[in-house]
Amino acid sequence: MAVSQRVKTQLGAPLTGGVRRLPPWWMQPLAHVVWAAFAMLHFIVMGLAKLLCLQGGPAPVQSEEDLAPTIDEETGCVTEIVSVGMLPRPLPERCYAETIRFVHSGESVFGKDSEPMIVVIPGNPGGPAMYQTFAQCLHNNTGLNVLVLGHTGHTARTRTTRTFSMYDQAEHKLMLLKHFEDIWRGKQLILVGHSIGSWIAMEMLRTLDEEHVAGVIHLFPTVHHIGTTPNAERLFPVVKYFRETATLVADMLTLLPQTVLERVVRLYFANEDPRTPSNEMVARTLTMISALSLRQALYMGYTEMAYMGDLDVDHYCKFSASMTWYFGQKDGWVTAHHAADITDHLPDSYHFHCDQGLPHGFVVHDSERVASLASTWIANIPVHSRAGRRLRVPETVTRTRNATSTSSVVVYSDEDST
Image 1 (cartoon, rainbow, N blue to C red):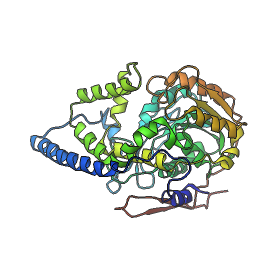
Image 2 (cartoon, one colour):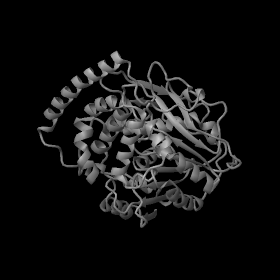
Image 3 (tube, rainbow, N blue to C red):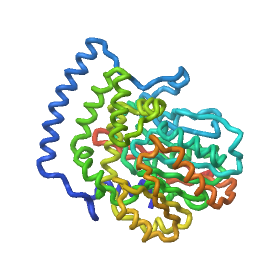
């Protein structure tokens, strides 16, 4: 079943099959009261800021070229991409009415045309700038071209109020691959999914097949029943009832000076890991901070916790022999029970359990170590030439909008498909 068809059947479906404990009945009315209070505070604070002409710490801009292309005036959708090893020329600026912005790109002596290409699907939040070091290390270790496909809207430059579910993001990655088909045509892809990126990669395989994909590497994968994990049980009330309040708070925080925002980011990272993040990682994180990008991440997180159900064993078994799974030791998003489900149902896959204490959010401190492991697994993936094959995507892709928006339908042509 195509991803778009699954959107229609699953987003409106009731929660079934081992979901988390539902929040108490009083949580929703409390959320309305809290939102009303913060909405009033937000109105006062932003009004004063406008009167006083206050400006906070926006995402840092490196050059005039960094600002281009401009944000699409109609939709405000922005997708950021990291490419290592190749530089598409000319740079595509639009993809189905949304802006594509390269946060990092460069050419290299590596990356021969006949070799496969690594496509990294990030977790949530899905800003590819966080994966820049990881992508560079993968390229240095393997000599292969690497493309990190960010989630649409997960950047401070986004201006759309439309929110995207995990199903929308899976469709979005297929559209990006179609858009960049001239880059990888004749090659096979190696998909590397992190966290929810693993689930998205597997949804992409409902359209892609072994003709296009040589292998899939799953890093700290969340592919079934994420709503039953310890982190999800703690955060589900926030993403369900308080995400609009959190958006208002984030909007007020952006008024703070950049030095204060940097300190806030460091405190957040310190809460997750006592190690001090690099200045470069803090700067990259700031490029993702905005009220609307947080709203995107929280809504996507809500759809993950609310709608991710059983492991689709039949679908996963089709690609079992070409998949490598890497599980953390103490992962609040992927418990030992979740990992055991995967290893039991997919015995033909390669399974590795971390013994180095690497965290779920490895991109902050451990990109080099995880890239070294992934590079070893990539080296063992058999690759077959599929020159001339073209990607076939669903003829009609429907994107779900929020209640105040209308649907948009994108129709692809199969005239060039074989």
